[in-house]
Length: 325
Image (cartoon, rainbow, N blue to C red; front, side, top):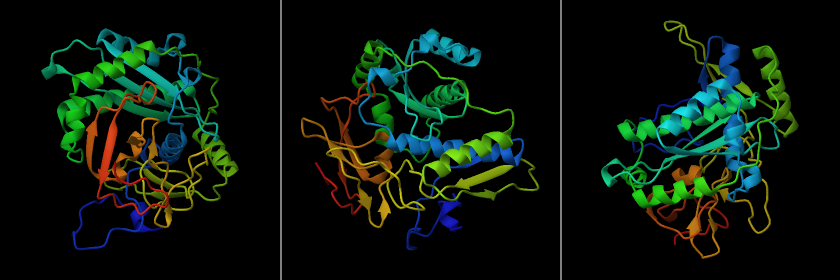
């Protein structure tokens, strides 16, 4: 197992070469038992694979009808968001693996003064039980919003915070979310009655997609006593551009060939042009480029808001890369 596929130690001498694989926390999870941690880790990898493969344009048929959600925990979170005057939108992005996966978007309703403006935040979740997957997406979106309010992450650029406090961008996204007509209902649970059963079912789905191996690294520290697992599944797509273990399985779409970054797959972060000629990238692929500038784009991502991104000094040497605007 390459060390870069497991380590999240980002402190290094700048004179040293970059690691051969993307370093991230994807597939890192803890639990009451190593099996539980492994299930959580694999679900996150499946979630990020589905995120990378999700279409850029969202149809109402993919939007989840939140009014029809009956799970009590989800209903409680939705009620709190409603009381806080926050618009919520959820899209079913379940991939061909068939593991329920959702993307959530929340944004404050317009009308707040500029100093109190809160932009859009997102969250994702995957689980064999659709209600658990939805709850994970909702709570991650709330967590992302709180993180931006607190300013507690030092790996986010100032432009991220500027976009979060842009009242016009927030108002545009809130209007898009409010005008959506969701049609999708949550399906039945696929979860078994044990973590052993859940893990076997998830691995069966991954094998069926052509991923022949899944490796778990036990990172549990004896002095802490909390089971921690790092799961690596070569072939599953990642959220960020760059080299990942195995060959990515990104689907080819008409008029949108697969992108490659160097000798590794772009992992769903290829740039495409909107009808107006603006270059855009998947939001989750934004870390594949440096020195990003943002401005309003007239072509929104369905209810996901609109941004035109200009990229300079992008480390990608992709074939078919559209380059700078």
